[in-house]
Amino acid sequence: MFSHVVIFWTKPDMPEAPDKLIAGAKEYLTPIPGILNFHVGKMAPSHRDVVDQSYQVALNVQFPDKKTQDAYQDHALHHEFVEKIFKPLCDKVLVYDFEG
Figure (cartoon, rainbow, N blue to C red):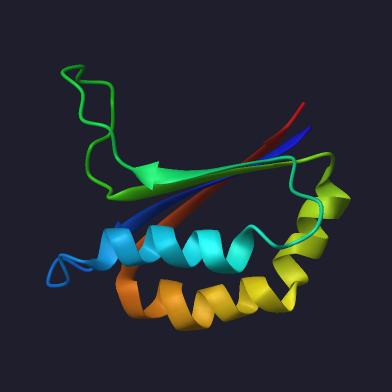
């Protein structure tokens, strides 16, 4: 199993950005072959100090292996998502990939 976790900070002057980012991720990324599980959503508020609440949207995509995730990264729809959705809506992104 290979997990690809992406944390997005949307542009603060665009209050509609989180919803547009989520819709764009679903539209452009879910059709890409090889995805086992796809989950995207807004940051969940928490009373716990250890929970980062500085971001707006998170994406968690699981693949059977790294090779499949590499193909996902190179897919035309992923490139379209980056150019048409991510770049216009986001100020910052962090990626956490892990396998096991």
